[in-house]
Length: 265
Image (tube, rainbow, N blue to C red; front, side, top):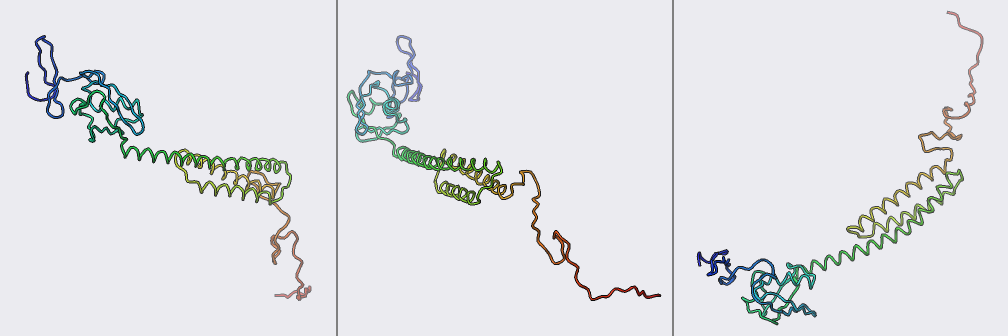
């Protein structure tokens, strides 16, 4: 055999076939296997993998690695390889270690644990998803109330556009009810999709309040239009000088006597 213990050493057998060798953990030089657990050399063995209250029977080539075993377990458990920790005889094994090199045989038992960091991350994601779901439900309840108020605003708009006078308290009550919904939205702690829905609903409530302000102004002065116009009333403020009044001021009595005697120069 040519070369040293470097990975990828090639040797020609008696049948003139090239054999590729590789260095395994522990310093043993073995025949290089192809990629993938299904193409590894050696007989197939069955391994019992214990995962919590579950047990999986996995068939793998005897010379497969623990990384190969993890990839097979992904299909069974849904855990990605980087989320798995495999223990054999009480010790955690690296992905590069071969099963047969550490003594794994047919019907050997391997323990699968989920990586703590991965488990904690999933719990956080689950909590966040639950929080988003609750926030969405809260926004939906507010939306239902705003829908009812929006119908009343539209009905009020139709009445005002017909020129019918409406009591001012109608505008005040609707505005207060909308502001209450705005406070409810502000109290909802939202992230992700729930935050987007809350922002949309806040803007909707603000638009309805602005619409009520316009309708209230039009209701108080039905002769005004949406265009720029000046509202003319018949009530003017009267000043002592008479400026701004509708009638001229009455002449003030004067003690000066007017005569026709003119002084000549």
